[in-house]
Length: 196
Image (cartoon, rainbow, N blue to C red; front, side, top):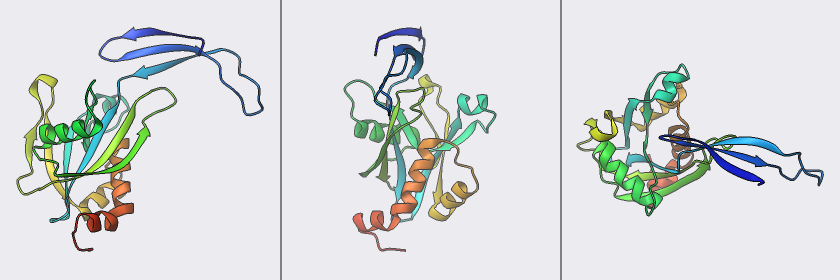
């Protein structure tokens, strides 16, 4: 890195880097400028009730989806930004309670990945969370954060239909759902629930 400065600071931040990097042939690129969107790192949790074989999902308005010309009412996992001093696990548990009114009884790590490495530093740390869906449903969220979140349950079959029909349009939920379907039997065995 040659230089870095903050080009914009609002609710989020954009840093401009002057940089060059090594090439595969052993040489170096010429100096170039790149902007990086800085919004922090996120933790997310897909709430799963293995006893009822269903998920607790959230639906809320997302301005980015609207700006992209997609349905702004996104179906999602619970997620939040990791604040200084918090662990990803702390955030996943807190957001599960705030956004869908459930307690995450057990957490199973799923994946940690870069959200959009071509222009953002954000990572997402995903968990599968064991919950009870017995009383799940309703409207949740923190009023002072402008959250208005519809919470509902979906069976494993319904989640698969949402995935197959293209109704899950955000990366966190797509990765979480696909991970679950690749690891479903292992999850059920780990949590002591008979295979389906």
